[in-house]
Length: 109
Image (cartoon, rainbow, N blue to C red; front, side, top):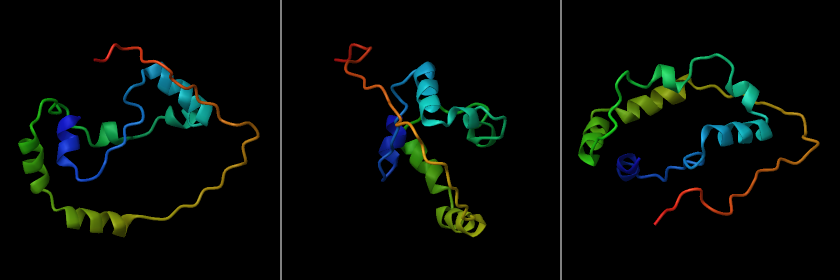
């Protein structure tokens, strides 16, 4: 994660990084997204992740891999293929409550 952070010029937000699976499921249920998240469908894990991903890369390796990409073409193609879809959702009758973590489960020094 540090290598990707260093290779990116934009901030990367990782709101789930400190949660375990059950905490993520609890939040998804509270937000009303759990049922959608378990529908069988192709996702980025099955479509884009290589069979044997590199887990100990260096900043230099990531920058070299990114340099080989034609980012402008990829962005142009993505914009060309994109479509706008508008959704409307019924108004919630109950507020969403998310528990606040007041202390860490890990002893971080």
